[in-house]
Amino acid sequence: MQLMRVNMEDLTIKIEEIPPKYEKLGGRGLTSTIIFEEVDPKCDPLGKENKLIFSTGLLTATPCPNSGRLSIGAKSPLTGGIKESNCGGRFSYEMAIKGIQAIILENQPLSSDLYVLYISELENKILKQNDLKSLKNYELNEKIKKEFGKNTCHVSIGVAGELKLKASSIASTDLEGYPDRFAGRGGLGAVMGSKGLKAIIIKRDTKKSRVVINDLNKFKEISYPYASHLMETRKIFSKFGTPLIISTANDVGGMPTKNFSIGSFEKVNNIRAEKLHDIIIKRKGKYGLPCSPGCVIKCSNVYKDKKGNRLTKVEYETIVMNGPNLMIDNYDDIVELNWLENDLGLDTIETGAALGVAMEGGLLQWGDAEAAKKILNEIPSKAKNGLLIGNGAVAVGKQLEVVRIPASKGQAFPAYDPRIFKGLSITYMTSSMGADHTSGAAIPGRGGIYKNKDYGTLEDNVGKVDLSRELQWLIAFIDSTGCCYFIYSGEILNFYSKLLNIKNGWNITWEDLLEIGKKITRIEREFNLKAGIEPINKLPEFFYREKLPPTRRFYDLNHSEIEKIWD
Picture 1 (cartoon, helix red, strand yellow):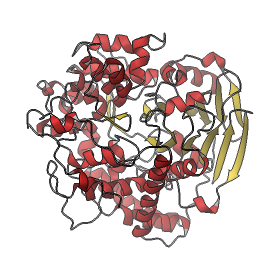
Picture 2 (picture 1 turned 90 degrees about the vertical axis):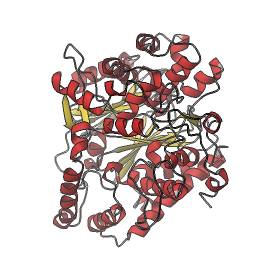
Picture 3 (picture 1 turned 180 degrees about the horizontal axis):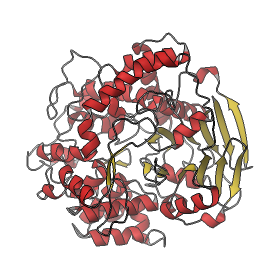
Picture 4 (picture 1 turned 90 degrees about the horizontal axis):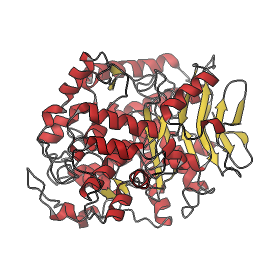
């Protein structure tokens, strides 16, 4: 496998063999290691010294189920620290079969021109494409198909990325060719915009995969039964997807409502997963879709508007942050906001949180979906309030002098109130990624690494520091495989060690893989410390002070215990 270094200053491309020290790294492990070794922690995230890295996983383009996710890493303009965000789509698979382990974007153009990177079996080239300036993601997608052919896939930025807004995302085309998969968190779209790159396009012209598996039959003997197990045990996710979490979060009183001031939504019946499923069926949308090659859980969907026009996929975090968090209960409004954010290239979680803070600050009225759409539509014209929203919840709160800003390390909380979701609360405070549920997803029913350890119940304080720490280690390694953490079970590291040993001729144990996860989180903390970011911070003050209706809970976990998490 190879590294592709793309120098945006002199517009050159250099191919390097993967050095031996990186052989057990992929995905997040590789992006974070390269950033740690090559990027000055004190650099301007939008300056030439920062690097943007796209990496496939250790198991991408193999028969391992759900192994097609793409990791993207850089120093974040939103948090000021190290960042990895991953997404589905076809891009990672196509990188891997071409033998590309990582694409590293370096430096910045000397002019204001806009470029695309084009990768094929015949040639790799950087093309000046000023005609793509200011295009939103869906129009850009059509233009790329027309110019480069339908037999391509790509990652891209929308207007928000070009404007270098701190909440900007990077889109990845899905298996149907729509730019509907997103690496949303941390403002990495702004870093791509700072590199003068609108899109990376891969032609799907590889005849024979360069991914080598030492014994394919043995690999399948391990991977296929687990894939069958996932298909059987995750059937309900194929039908309803992540919106299933709505009922659970609402019923336990931990679903962010009205900017995290309430834990249950009075009109929740209008947005439950069953309601969404009924609309999808009635309007002839789709459900049970895979997010990337090899996905067997198939928790994605396609939502259509009342006229039958295709909008986008919709997931739990987006629904809640753009729905109950804003006091909006109409799916058409929620999904239209989702579509607008996708089209502009904005993180749906950060933008939903920013709109919630804006409503609390009086810039918009609660529940006014049309005003929310209007302010998003003002972003391309660089209207003041649109740009403010596009820079995230903390920026909005500071400008409007709002005290209640749900954020950690500069990044907005996802759709789990920390007063109820105690394990996630610790992840919010201690992860190098900021408030990122995917970096230590202590959601209902998920335990840690060790079978006999007591991790308590969802709302209590028992075992939560251990749970968050173990999940952060574990997920750091899962993110390095290219796998979706929805395939998680207590035996997952043992499963991965078997596959990697068969694939590569290694002799590693699950404990070895856990050590890799520990090292990844350690170097991420070290990078942040050098950048001036402490590894542990407290929640915003209002979570300790305000009792959350209807449970009347406030945050009561002893912070001295949390401070020992990395000892």
